[in-house]
Image 1 (tube, rainbow, N blue to C red):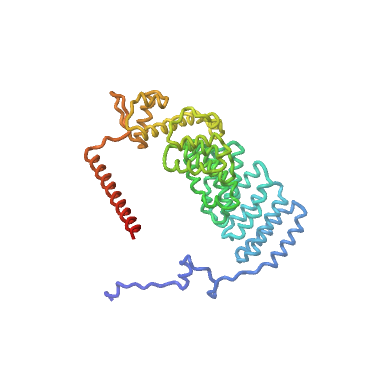
Image 2 (image 1 turned 120 degrees about the horizontal axis):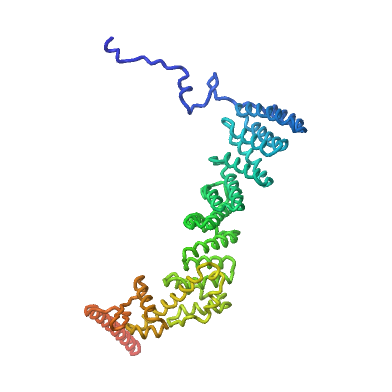
Length: 458
């Protein structure tokens, strides 16, 4: 008995597994899953009866009570088709017979928040109420949209409807002058993760997000949203309008960032989409304003081969000047025409771009001088470039800092060296390499001469 005291007798209730396992489906006394109860005949009869009672708005409370009672029976009895019919019919009668929209909103909320309400019933209720948002105006429209957004919140099968409702709400707030609130509301919806929307709808929604964030002056958020748009989707047939709209919005962002090269790429994308010559002019202008680099030079050479460039004398001339290794006189011949373009003058940065244009011409001229001179007096170079010596020294120093040119300035002697001083070892190495190349060339030539002699003597 002492040894057996360590063991305890546990009595398990026969229905323990049913009562304590939350994953087990409810069962009947026979152990089978509950069957669906067919209430279709009763549903059709009540719909017919309530339709006849709908002749008087005073009957609405009685009608809804009858329909709510049957709605509960169909919901508990798992008769989803009949449940959907009852819910749709109830909401339509509430809208038809109600004194105002509040009656329909109350009916909609009541039916959607029922315990264990079926997803198909909620979906048909939302689908029935969605067209009313277009018909209503003012506070009623706003109240209906808010109600539907609350119902669709967190329901994956209603994500497309929630996205459209959110866009309606953002439009209302924008029309009321609440740009910040409109942008914040629209940002709540991560439409790029929705599978129920088409590519076109996703792109339109994201473009609207970018537009509102730019109006809000939230440029960081605008850049983040712009990265969510799939460029392949914009390149598809039928998306030309959205492509132009996207790159037009991006020009506003890159104007704020003072990014001339990306501005040129934006306008070039617009030009390739609709063959707009104004966009081509803007492309050439902002390429001229872009920092010197391989990508910028590649774009200049590609645009130089465009046949439409022959129709724009100012753009063609500036590209030729930038691609030649010759000093450019400032101001250029067509500079006034270039700076009169809308893309240049429409922003508050026209003075900034004007100064950048002068800087790019100076930098081009310094690179040309570095190509032809190993050293030159600063005063003489300033005369060639028509610059003040102080401005010249500033620009040369800036170019040395960013690595675009090699130079050393000897201030006491006023000499600028564009070639690095070579050590005796490097000079000897170069001489040895040149000599080896020369001897190799002589050997190859001698071999070819002997070959020809032997061929002709044979």
